[in-house]
Amino acid sequence: MVEMCVVLYLALCCFSYCISLIFIYRRARRRRGLGSLRAGSGSVRALLVTAHPDDECMFFAPAVLQLVQSGAAVRLLCLSSGNYYNQGAQRKKELLASCAVLGIPASHVTVVENKELPDDPKAEWSTALTSMLIHKHIKTHSINMVLTFDEGGVSGHTNHIAIYRAVSSEILIIPSTLYMLPTPCLTAHTFMVEFIWLNASPFIPQEAMLCHRSQLLWFRRLYILFSRYMFINTFKFLVKM
Figure 1 (cartoon, rainbow, N blue to C red):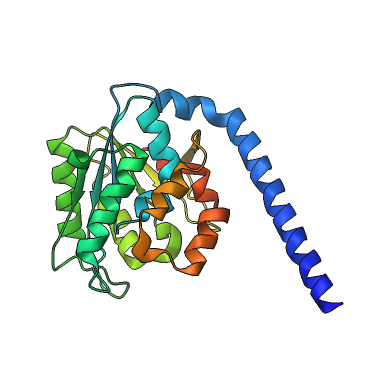
Figure 2: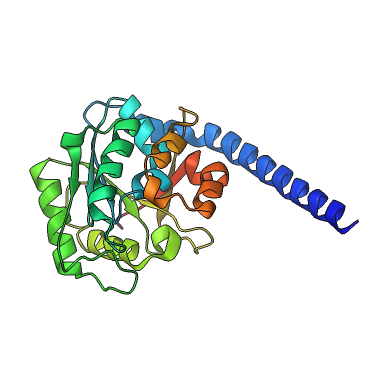
């Protein structure tokens, strides 16, 4: 009897999750126009700024795929090699394989190795150094769109949050639109505008994530199946007053 109740409960949870995804998808379809217009120009030079290998597909895959398919030039700046468990060399190879699946060429991928920016949830990254690295990349490649984490870091990782602090400190002087991926349940800021990218290529985010074999623990396999970030990205950006 208990087993039956558990099965019914899990089935109800899965059903509710599917209904929620359908609702989000339909809502996004109605609101997609402006976001698609911005991404639909070959003049878009987008920079995705992440903290670790696998961030690009765990969180940003739908947006990357939409931008690539629309003809935008997409670059990735990854501010560490993910060497927390001394797997940095392997994780860089996995990152390049993942980016190839997403449509980002190896020549557009930059991995920073700096002892002041360690892959460590307890480390406080220098805002000045992080800002300088991002700003230099933006200037060098004439970037006009930046995508990264919001103030909650999506997953709450301190390295993610450090990137937000660095990029937001530059927002008034860089010639780029700053898109931030919102953290679930984080109160929205005033004067935020949302844009939505749907995943038009089913299973590609999952394929990209599978390239990160060193990170495929059991809970990440569940993440691949059920996370909304595999299917849809909702971004917001600060509007100047």
